[in-house]
Amino acid sequence: MKVKFKETFLVLILLAVVFCNTVYSNAAESMLETRTIDDIVESYQRNPFRINVSVSDVYEIQPNAEPPYVAGSLKREYLEEALNCVNFLRYLVGLPDDIELNDTYNNYAQHATIILARLNILSHNPKKPDDMPDDFYNLAYRGTSKSNLAFGYSSLMDSIIGYMDDEDDYNIDKVGHRRWILNPSMAKIGFGQCGLFHSAYVFDTSRSPSIKFDFISWPARNYMPVEYFYDGSIPWSVNLGNYYTFSSPDNIEVTLTRRRDNKVWIFNKDNIEEYGYFNLNDDNYGMTKCIIFRPKNVGGYYKNDVFDVNIKGIRHYTEGTAEINYTVEFFSLKDAIAEREKDFTYGDINGDGDIDSLDLTILKRYILRKAEISDIRPADLDGDGDVNSLDLTILKRYILRKIDKFPVEK
Image (cartoon, rainbow, N blue to C red; front, side, top):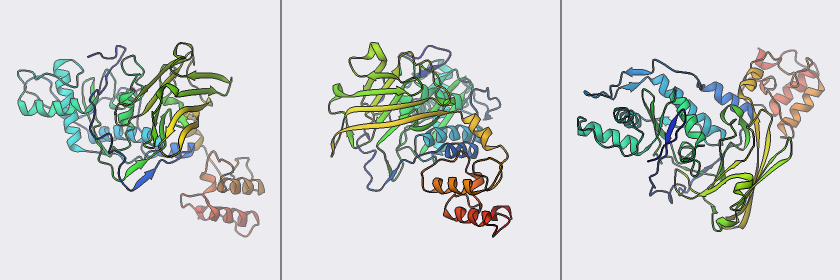
């Protein structure tokens, strides 16, 4: 089995799954949510996690990959930090951030990393070492055969980001790790680690009701933190929802436009050499119907970059020929958090130091969804966590000097 040769290694789950036609079959369905920058910042601050740092002291029970074998266990706070990472990435694309840790899955994943460390390989189908007890091997094999596997990362969180990248020659044609992390039917997950070997048990389809979606894209549509998608080697992907079909794959064409210089990439089966990587994959890695493309010479992605995506040649089961159009606006999560943590004054919506009719106009336009507010905290004047017509009324009363203090300040 080929693996990824770089400073880190990944192995892709290659097993087809039999439930692919029933993933979205529940009668009751929920829709994807649209995220704002403020939503994304709040989500991260509510459940933060670290990346690009070496994390030590991760074991509750120290594992042993030599006889006598000890699966060991990871500290709960470390597992929860990895869970935060998965939930945040799913939140970006509009999925609920409600995946839960499952102790059975954690146990499978932890056993998986022991056999990988013992054999010093990445394999979904490892052979049983002669000195390993049958019951230990059975748990380990269950873990390796139903997990994303990785080697060489400094933490579980970094391995999860690695799954999302899937940029190497062996994985780019499927981006299977990414699709399993974003699998809409997932409700539970488990993690394991032994040294630099990592496992994420992702074969879960227990979510009910199912999630209805038109498409799931990476980088996420609308707003995307550049911290998680900055390298030009990382492919884009779009998984079509259950109501779309690859009826004529040869007709599918993706146009990607970068606004700052109007540079255009056109992806189809005939333009691969000129514009970059392009592939369609209909295997079930948590999701089917995946469109994958990587713009040639894009040079990376930066704060304030905006890209428009147009997909033609797909078909809707009931509406016939269809197109998909969406926009990705990159922003710095670090900068957005810093901006959010700056001092502010309630009622000063535009941050100019005054509370006046201009703030009232901006707030009214925001409530009518005609304008965006970079920081909604100054607008939540009753402190209920929402910005709505009640806050508008409070601000109007303050400007008219009918009140001298906002309810949130009392």
